[in-house]
Length: 271
Ligand code: BEZ
Image: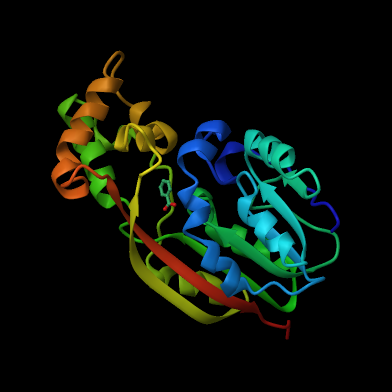
């Protein structure tokens, strides 16, 4: 597939300023493992041109390629792209911003798992960019964090920070977790016909995280811990764990409160 042309920066790329790609692979394999049925929903056909937007280290990109599609993985984080290239040298990965990536020609499908919620700036621009990348009738198949995603964890982080004297406004909330109605509207306004859409709770165990929720916070919660007063990060993490343990780890196994929005949408032909 032709290469995308786009610049990447931290705001619209699918992640925090810099990911720890090694930790991500070691302890957060569930991000892809939970989504293997997303590839079934995508149903890639041999020879189809497919973009994997927010591909991370390329696990699902490789699954799509294994079904015979001509796939390109795009991610906004340079470390993720580097690791994806090292793990899957036969595949194409590019570093680009979800709001302004472009491919030569048009794709049959754009796929995205657990990435759109990181592109919190200008979600309509991301959708417009996806529409431009697709041929008329092409499909956009995606799953993202939905309204109330990880709310128990974020409420506890805010409370732990408040107890340290840090107001909620000091945290740059890193994600976009839309209500279903809001996102359907954006897709329709962006020139898509939404053919399937589900909102569901997906309790997500942290079985590969030796330090449970502390690892999750280290990986994903940097915007919260960065707001902690000097020398108080560990106190905030410990307090967050204490506040959530009864609900998320009642039997010694951390199970986080994920909610998902999963959809299939078709790009309408222009009038
Ligand atoms: C998610 O996949 O829903 C998610 C992952 C990390 C942080 C927040 C949400």
